[in-house]
Image 1 (spheres, rainbow, N blue to C red):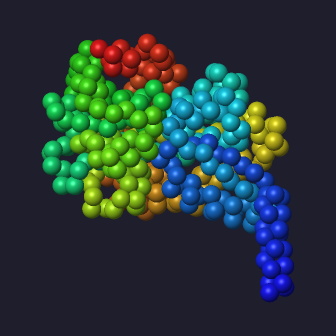
Image 2 (cartoon, rainbow, N blue to C red):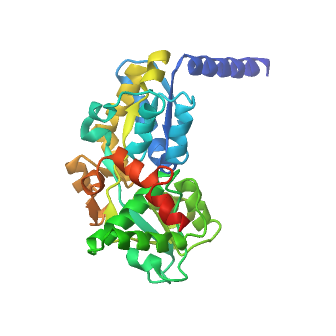
Image 3 (cartoon, rainbow, N blue to C red):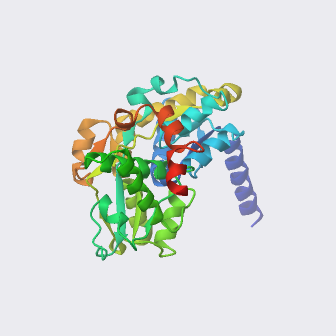
Length: 330
């Protein structure tokens, strides 16, 4: 008995010792990437050790994307930040000087390793007959959208709806009227996409939840595939979630090499395949073709080509007093 106790104690001490020797890496990310990084992190850890490096201990922080960026600016020691739009990463430069202004040029594809589309999650059997953006503004409809002021998911929803009206030939006044009606139909605005999912799926509020297509898969895994339907609208802003090292942090901690490798590996064949398996559209065209059955055709509107650069988008639409505030307060 005593020998068994000593062996267990030694094993526990060895585990603690190995853990303390591992390089710590903090990835501050947004709500709906939990499943992806749950699969990706062990794959990277295995790859990293195969390259002859010591073990890396990866910690994750998830939340509404803008709230997460604010936490890093306020001192959360993120080695890397993996957000769902460039505005939240730009903020690290603009308000904290934590990264260079040209951060997006340091990795391929403007530092966005994959993309996603906005979809509607509707009740089983689609009882309200929801098929496109126009159906969401009908009187009496309840739509769950996270707050565009704190959530990239909410901002992509806002931009997708704006793009839809433009595609219908509408002018800016018609766009604003459409968005005002859309947000009039929003009974609850959570700070992030995960909270919005809980409102819809657990609290049973709303006729439709607007989210990313990879969140639809997370919902299916958690709540069951027969509990809802997924509707692809005719138009979606192309969500391109970018990533970057947080330079000030990695320089202080001495983790630049492993942080860089962690992000680089997102573009590897394994990283891209893990993305596809989690219903994120990989940039690798061959892997995208391999998983084509998971990604229905939808008109994806490139955001910067449609609306201008992200800093201008943030200033015009989402800063205090911007277009969203004007629409929502009216």
